[in-house]
Image (cartoon, rainbow, N blue to C red; front, side):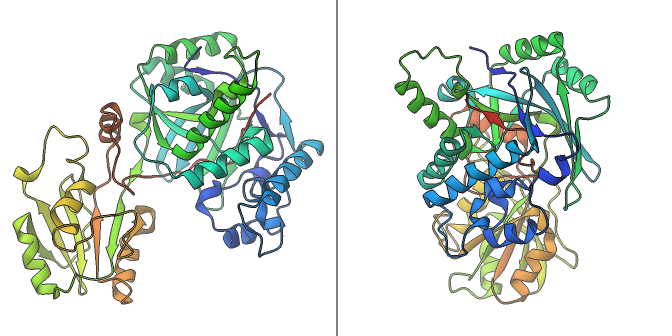
Length: 413
């Protein structure tokens, strides 16, 4: 079996890409999705969040929602809005967000290699979220939400993708948030063979975003394999929909923290307590960390720059040396008594896409007592954690730009 392979994608008709493309299912609430689809009957949100087409009191995880997803998908196919490619292809996919550009490959990735950790993870998954994606895949008999993967340095792959994305695109959509999504179909047999061989030579791929989608694909494959007495390993359920970018092009933004209280400490006492692990510098300007080990602290209407003391950084532990880990181990836990980031209601997380202004707003409103701005986790750090078969702390990475749903889906024949 190959690490990746081409597939016959289900994608919008040439003049329908803008009408179909939608944000990922998990970045919008149901109410937000209802607003987004106003006047857009062909939006993929009717498939990825089909509860928007049912009564408001409908449980998003009820069987009726998955059935409605299938009904809506079948309707778009029947109308010719979505069409299946005639032969297996790869697809070049470019994302442009402001001055940032990244070009990757849409492919079907091997479940077997996911199961053996050649496609490497860095997060735990929640059973309820896995269950939701399993039901969605089974209901649609298709994978519609791509897993975001990264590949290590591979100039040959970069060159093929650059060449494939030179001509007129097969889809070109600028979303409501200004992000441009461009797709080219790669039909050339030599390019397909070269890409397959190049990925087969790689030691690993890395999940950036989509741990629940990949875990669900693995569960679906296991169930179908067990139910198929003629299983060969070549069936489409043995692969999952992915978009794979070169790791050096991927953009991780900061994932910041806000806390509700100072664990009974006055701001001056709290600040003094941080001196044991950090050097502290008051500043009149907002602090956006410029390097690992540096943090911005917004407290009582003022910004401070915290810098971790170098001797506290464990150089050979890929998880413990992360900025998110150091903040937890040296400040959130011992000073604020916030030790379980997944369950403690005293802490919340703010994606860097919202800016430092959002941190100030949450504190100035009185909702939160303090905010911490972090330096973004680097792709090399994520890969090191995955290579060590370890797990990153919760809310360690915020990838931007996000992939669109609906531009290519993987049907399970």
